Every structure is written in structure tokens, then in C-alpha cells.
Image (tube, rainbow, N blue to C red; front, top):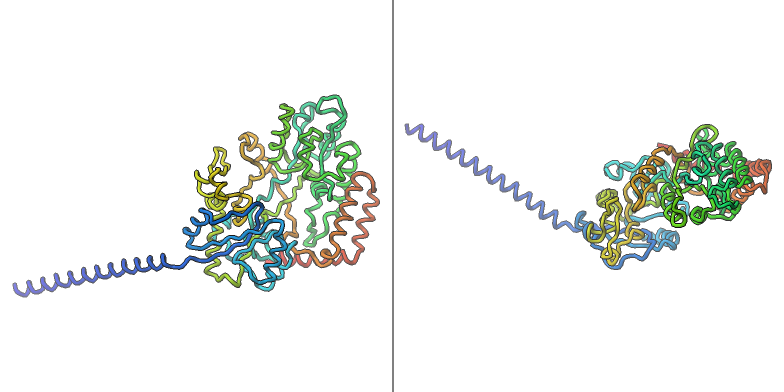
Length: 511
């Protein structure tokens, strides 16, 4: 019996000891967790400096949104704004001084080519292998990253924009109805509509005071006048080699078409001096019945048209098909400006922190916080989903024209199809136009200007633009056009330009 009691006592003692050790272990683990948490909280915030451009006055003082972002990411964000008119000059000065911020906005490498040299020298982080780890940034369309890449690698975070929606046909549907015509689906049908708008009194005022289309001829015709016939965008890839789009047979075909349309009144006679900014004026004044512009512009311009003519109905629709039966659109770059990350001041841990911040501002909530402030205080979301800055937010200095310039934004395929107040049926129709588009990217996105182009490009462009306008208005013939193209094909400097462009393109396409 005594033996059994002893055994029982030993067992109970062992159990108590085990429980005590376990309790000590748990206490130790909890204590370590608490210590780790305290250590984490005491970690100094990461300093992150960002320099970008401003289209309006920069905010004075620290914005509440920046404070919230600092707390969320345990960072100390310092934002510096450069007035948009001075951006190229100031960026080049920063690069020359080698006193760069951690993150730097570059509007266009073609205007700041020194940054391409800096990339070659390893000044900025190669982000190619990192972006996929940040789900919101990774949602950007593949072509956005391709267009932003340099020599096949991504050295920047693009400030994302839609790839399509900037090219659509704006047409007076009420004029078509008056004339008993259908919206044009082909270039042949388009010609008939342009001629009818000029000659058949579509506004019913008994005067010959209307024209087919308003198109820009100054400083040079929009490239879509040629590209919608299948010339390619700026350059055309033929079996892996690039040729200027205006060297193609389709370019001559397009010029013959527009010359015929111009003679028939299908293009406003002021075409040589008209600028894109004047599209709206001509359409709202009822002088022209057609233009190529952003999808949503049809709704915007129609609001003004209807002030004078409540029955006016300007709508957006697809571009007509070229003679080969295909509709050709020029794809936008998909971004406006890029953010480079300084490799000298940013180690990998800090790089990941920066990418984490930009990944968050690539969501709707993150973007709205950074740009507009606190919801229902600094801005309100309207029933149609659009954001409206409150007076309180304006007083604090929030402004999309400036506070939105340091973030990437989020990809919205339909942002060029909508605007605040747009009726749902118009928006749905606009979305269908955007969905119908299959566009061609410019293969030279991300390539710097060649040495010959830097020397002679301005002169070449002027000569080309002048000849395009002159052929369309009939001042020069198609035979003159053939001779003009030949002079460039025979010009050693231009040949070198084509060669260097192709060399850079092939380097870009390397995986």
C-alpha cells in the first residue's frame, strides 16, 4: 500500500512539474510575442521621398491622408511637387546633381533621354521580377508593362491609364436620321455620309453651311487618318522589322481617300490650320457632323449642343472598317508617366515597402484616400460612383490635379467612356464601343529618339506633316507623294534612323 502511495505521489509530482513547465513555456512564448510586438511597434518608420509633377498649386502642410498612409505602412512619406511647366528642366537638373529622391516621376523618356542612360548604368531598380508579387499592380494589362519597358525589362511603375477609348467616331445621329442614312460601318459608307453632311442640308436651315468632319491639320494631321486604313501605328512591323507607317501602300490609299473626301466637302475647308482643341467648337456650333475623339466626348459635347438644339444627338460609335474589312485603332500607351526607384538610396527591403504602398494606391480605396482624403469628410462618392471633393477637402488642399500625381491609380477600362452625371443607357452604349475595340500598340513605345532623329527629326516631321496636308487638300498630287517618300528612303540619315530604331526595337523585344 505504501508503495502504491509513493508511486501515486511521484506521478502527481511529475504531472504537476509537466504542467508547470508547460505553463512556463506558454508564458515564455507569450512573452516573446509581446516582446516582438513591442519591438515591431518601436521600429523606426521608413523614410520614403517621392518627387512628381503638379498641375495645380501644391498643398501646404501635411495632408491627413498622408498621415493615415504613414500609420498604415509605418513610413515617413515626403512628397515634393514640380510645376508641370518646369518638369523636364527640373528632372534633368536632379539627375545631373545625383541627388535623387527614392521615387521619381518621369513624364516621357523621349523628353528626358538622360534617364535611359542612367538606367543603362544601373541607377534604378529593375522591377521585372517584383511586380507579380503585388496583386493590384499585377492586374494592370500586360501591354501597359510592355509599353513601359526598356530593352525588355521594366524599370518603372507606370501611372496606369486606359489602352482604348481615345479613338471613336463621334457622329450626329439626328443628321443621319434627317437624311435617312444609317451610321457608316465601312470607309465607303463613311464617304457617302461625309458628302451628304456637306451637300444635303442635314440641319434643315436651307443653307449650305455644314461640312462632313472636323479634323486637325495643325501642326500635322492626326495619324489615325492613315492608321485607320491599316498602316500600323507610327511604325509597322513587317516580319519583325519596322518601317515608318507612312511608307506603306495603305498610307497612299488613305491619302487618296481623304483627298476625295476633302474635295466633296467631307472635311472642313479650314482643315490645314484647325487644331484638335477646336473639335468641340465646330461640333457644338453645328458646323460639322463628325469627328474622331474620346468616346465620352460625344456625351459631353452633346450637352452643349442641346442647349441650342434640344433635338441634337451626338453619339459615339465604332470606327468604320478599312477596305480589307478590318477596323484599325491606335492603342494608347496605357500610362501617363512612370515612377523610377532610386537604387542608390533604396535597398531591397525599402523597395518592397515602396511597392507595397503603390500596390495599395492601385486600389479604388487606396487611390481615393491618397488623392481625395477621408470619405464623407473630404470627398463624397456620388450615386453614379464618381467622387466629388467637398469644400472641406478643397480647403485642406486636396486636388486631383496635384494630389493624384504621386500615385499610379487603378486600371479602369471604361474611364474614357464615362463622366459624372452620364445616363446609364449612354454609359452602357459607350462601354459597348470600348469593348468592340481591338487596337494596335505602337511598337516603339519605350524607345528613345535615335541620334539622327535628335538632329533632324523636327525638320523631318514638319516636311512630312506639310506634305500630308498638301496631298489631302490637293495642293500636291499622289505622284508628288511617291517622290517625297523616295527622297526619305534614299536619305542616308533617315536610313540610319530606321536602322537604329530597328536595332532598339529588337533589343526591346528580347525576353
